[in-house]
Length: 195
Image (cartoon, rainbow, N blue to C red; front, side):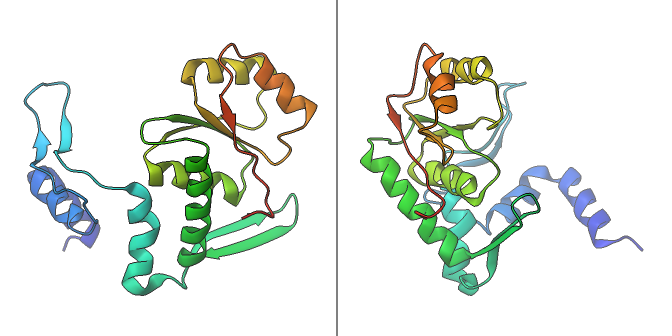
């Protein structure tokens, strides 16, 4: 007797388009797809052509809408700072909406690029989801990069904005961003207390 996993795996291989179409029914689509799998230009395959969805809505709002607003969505447990924070779907949705609003007030909109330069804290997740909520493209840069390496990533992404880590006004961050030839036109100071 096959396990549920094995049966699911076999089904996914036998009918990939049907399998993923059924899985996609669990998501909220702003515009339903025209075709599940477009293989008309190999090797450039496309899934769900014509479809449009919002990743942030599906990651947060949909869970709240389906009655899971009080369930844990994010647990931050840092042994370094001896900090534990728990955010429910509703709390995380609201924090992300505030951050998305702050990005919009800075003029960030769909298609703009945003650099996220933060340590592994809940606000980094919030910044990524906020970008997804408004349709901005985000690039996460490890907070420990040396100044030259950060400058290379800023030059490559050519962001319109950045979400620096909480010590954004520090000389170390200024040193990193000043080495870039295409510094972001806007910067979003992020405070752990603000969200």
